[in-house]
Length: 284
Image (cartoon, rainbow, N blue to C red):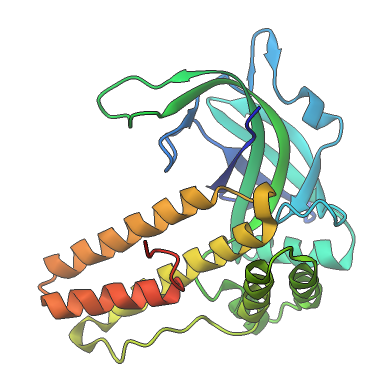
């Protein structure tokens, strides 16, 4: 049976208890891959796809099940097509760093993993061929993932006075435990992002420097997501989803550049910056 994962910008909210943060873990909106988890798929009359998860409701970091969880999911339920809940963060140095990153809005993302129990191919002119509507799903796990508010989220967190020594240690450990040289390099790159804002060569961008800077920021943000996904291997959020999102973002930047009157050469330069920052992941 195929196991699915999906990445969400979870709009975390700090609760009254300063060790608890509220999340929206999933919604019933059509995702970038064209699939959709329908309202009632998690919980409905006669069905509870959350039951087994509630028996061991751990909140992992980057889908790394070899490490202790960073928190415990509490009060999880489906309401109006949204899977919502809260996370009580553990009282450990590593968990505290992750908590501080979410609390300061430096991180926003959560990724859910589930098994499809009942599904059908989507119908409608506005749905892609092969798209799936999931009618019943069973929740397997929830993980905190690196979806920074911007490309320099982790380095900005350090600038704001947050110590990220434990997170950096995890990244270095992940590079050692990686199964392939590519994953090892990606883990090292992630560790580098903890201290240095991703850069790309673009000059000053001329009169449209703001658009070039925005393209650098967005492409670096997407790269950070992909690095975590790739280091996590099969347990990570869908790499295909992230590639689709990156390509769509690039097309949007190219469109905006043309609407602002940039020449073909400048549009091509902007696209080159975006692709360079993504380190070849959009090629082919």
